[in-house]
Image (cartoon, rainbow, N blue to C red; front, side, top):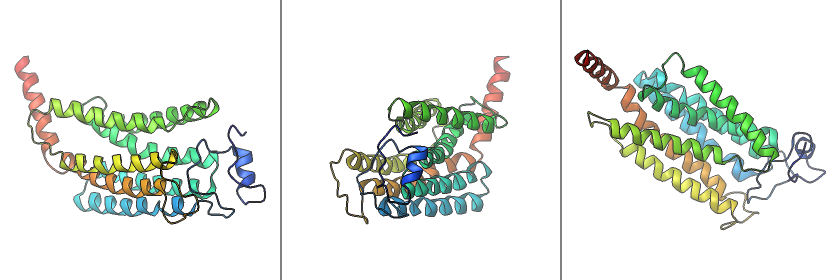
Length: 256
């Protein structure tokens, strides 16, 4: 199965895997080396996600935030799958790269759905699994039809921002702080800009295996998501959620 051009030379270690499982649907600027680490800059830059995962785990464990501690292994898997993908450059590992992203960004969407009372705590895991499975199926359909399935992550990011805006408009107590959310969003936008410049070859030095635009995406995104994480801390480290629940119960009683 190969809908795209194999980025590896015939004699290279990852060539048969890209032939068997398919080539990835995108070729980043960095030159594909004939080594087991085929894209050093894009591969090793994923260590930033591992460091971010350690930081998130430490924060969530220290504060006793069971709802948020899941984000640490999700972040770690996102970095690990991306590491393996850029190391090997084939479609199968690219799919796992996207599954890693789904595991992290979809949980942020679910946390906002919980705040909007659209799903319950009991249903959040089945909902998460369903979102990941459906999205993975769409990845393969889009792959076969030469549609850039990277757009799925863009829609997920827009869903996070959109639900956050709805929550902002519904915030009766006006106590939600958005400094961390906006600060992290700046880093994520810069990360996306770096990746786009790489993909569109606006900035491109294929033989530079220390610095690449897509590698910068990994580092800036890890920083941005670590900052954004602090935004959700305020909903699971205070009595705010309980307070809003009690307000809803009182208003329901008054309406009756």
